[in-house]
Image 1: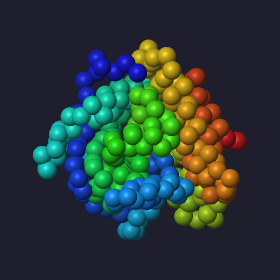
Image 2 (image 1 turned 90 degrees about the horizontal axis):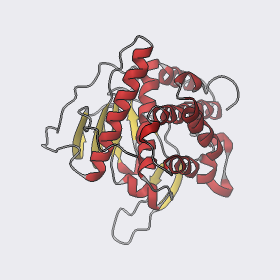
Image 3 (image 1 turned 135 degrees about the horizontal axis):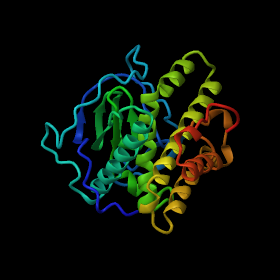
Image 4 (image 1 turned 45 degrees about the vertical axis):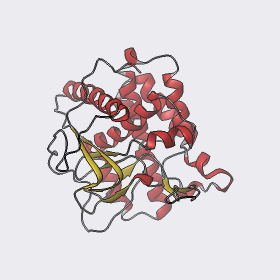
Length: 290
């Protein structure tokens, strides 16, 4: 994907190792929780299929209300500088592209687009949703409007999930920005409220629809930047979507009632829906079959 002409986004922070603020709300993530990821010398990492579409931390009453837009800044109190590695620089350019794309889409609707803040961290951090670990994968925290990313995950994406390529990485970021759109539109809060009263399986089904919509929004972003795509990019994105479907990750022990992100076929379908339409109105995963 050609992004070299873009200046890196300024709505970024680098929390370093274990940085950030506290809180206790809901968290929206792209991938299942990775446990036993080689935490010590000789430890063998084991992929556990525990999805984190909504991982509820301690604290009561915080229901994806969003709050005020976060302050954007270069660096952090710890003196870390964002966008200073090749991986961070690429992520910052992807974020800048999403900034431009969604600002234009919101403007078409006569609205302003409040920017999210991408927060880089290493191994662990505190977010507005509580403690975070890199094993969780990238996630979006609605209360502080933060996209949290440990760029070491890109290696996981390639080596563990078999989804290499820069567009696969861009899809991860665009998906999390998709959760930001859901936070702004109120869809995330609607789902969170519903999940408080629904049985577990039905609540999971609502989470699936939310995740598939974020996939579709990622496709919308890509469609609106089709002139930046290179041969093989779309295939990289679809390969990543396929690799992280609930059924693929759970394998022979797959239990549909526990799915929280959607099957591989569903994830590819909705990413393609966004890619083909370039229209967020076509990303209504809450009406009819998915």
